Length: 121
Image 1 (spheres, rainbow, N blue to C red):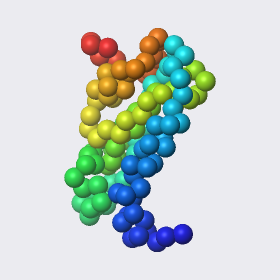
Image 2 (image 1 turned 135 degrees about the vertical axis):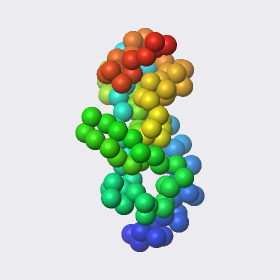
Image 3 (image 1 turned 90 degrees about the vertical axis):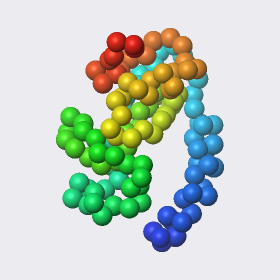
């Protein structure tokens, strides 16, 4: 086990390998897919001013549960529960903005909640 400071130092060198592994675990499109996003909070709201690790990338966002500081993680899965697409977005970006890029290689029906409704979609 490595300590926290060493972990933070090693993350940039390990991230490309982790992304390649995740890409290799994606499933196949079956014609039925589901999309939803979850929040990826990087710190408590009281510590936003002191937070430095993701200071240039993380933003404030709001969900039905309240305000948070971090990212949104939209996921698309098929009807068998296999991962089809994933994207990490700033929390102040609308959920529907990630859909066109995530669905480039998908076909069939895509079901989601009201966060994904827009005139273009």
